[in-house]
Image (cartoon, rainbow, N blue to C red; front, side, top):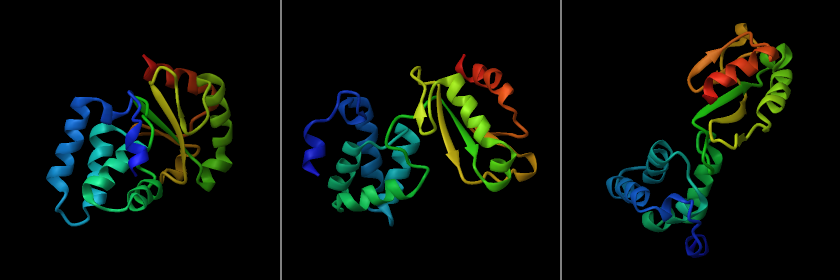
Length: 168
């Protein structure tokens, strides 16, 4: 745990006094609540945007829990991320209806248009692309979610125009 806290990158939230103050405030406010690890991590994800490895070690140290517990929570739940996300998140549904309906072609077109694979973020930090199992829009397959908006019956040729709206 100490190793993760020895060489904190200057881009890490722990290296920035204002963000570290937010982290410390979250820890102080929630350290004694039931399920503190999950509560703290959820608040960090919401307020900082991601939970880096040094942040995980810091949380473990401050809550006096094993690093493996903190990392286990972060790695188990898909809504936690360990790297910064883009301003907008695009999720492609890989549920059966969407997959059969054309999601693989949407992912291929996304790679072509944005130049990134799922699980990564554009260089300008505008868009993070992800895949997910099902978004519950099977009748509108293939479907995607941009931030919290579901778009259905999406065709690959629509993607450049859709992405342009979120990159400006």
